[in-house]
Structures are given as structure tokens and as C-alpha cells.
Length: 159
Image (cartoon, rainbow, N blue to C red; front, top):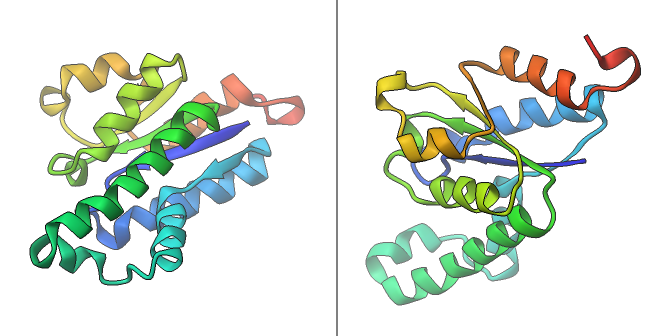
């Protein structure tokens, strides 16, 4: 099984790398699942295209910025649609100004992939669209782990 790790990057601390690193270790050790981490994948594109300063292009060269971002978008959506078996999404304030997480969740829902949402916002602030796209919503990663063990655990991993 392969999990795609969706969540804020553009406006998140460390592009959201910390939670992704932590859940990656747990998924591999506990469920023997692989992951697609868009922080790592986009970092590879940055290196491949010599785009280390692409954030600056948003102001200095918007066309170049859009061209590069389209590579990232294409890579991410291909992974969601064609490679991942399910999505794990951290929904917090960092996603509200961005767009990628919204798109990833919507595409996953549309093609029938389970979406496990870790919602860190008050329920009244959660978009109805996102709520409807989520297969299951929990409020923290401890609850997410319980859900994933129940749904994907095997042998002694099952509660």
C-alpha cells in the first residue's frame, strides 16, 4: 500500500516536513506501507530543474514560476491518481491560503481513493467540500493511527 501525504506546504513551517517524516516512519514500521511525500518529491524537482530560488520567481518572474509550479502540480496529481492507494491529509491553518491540498483531496475523492483527514481546525471552520471528500476525519494523529491499523493492519498490528 502507498499513502500520499497531503497538507500545507507553501505556507507551512518547513513546508510541512516534520509531520510527514513522523507518520512515514510509523506507516513503514507498523503497517509496512510506502509513502509519497510531496516535500521530498518537489525537492527533487527543484534540484532537477535548478530551481532553488523558485519562491522568488513568484514576484520576479511569474511566468517562470507558473511553469515550474505546473511541473509540481502535474507530479503531485499523477501521484494521487495513479500511484497512491489512499491519502493522509493534515488539515490546518497552513492549507487555507494554498490550493494544492484542496485539489489533491478533491481528485482523490473523485477517483475513489480513501482520504483520511486529520482536522486541526474547529469543525465550524472546516470546509463542507473538504469534509465531504474525506472518507474519515479525526482530530489527531493518534486517532488516525487507530483508524489505519483497523483498516489496514494485519496480524499482530490489528487492535
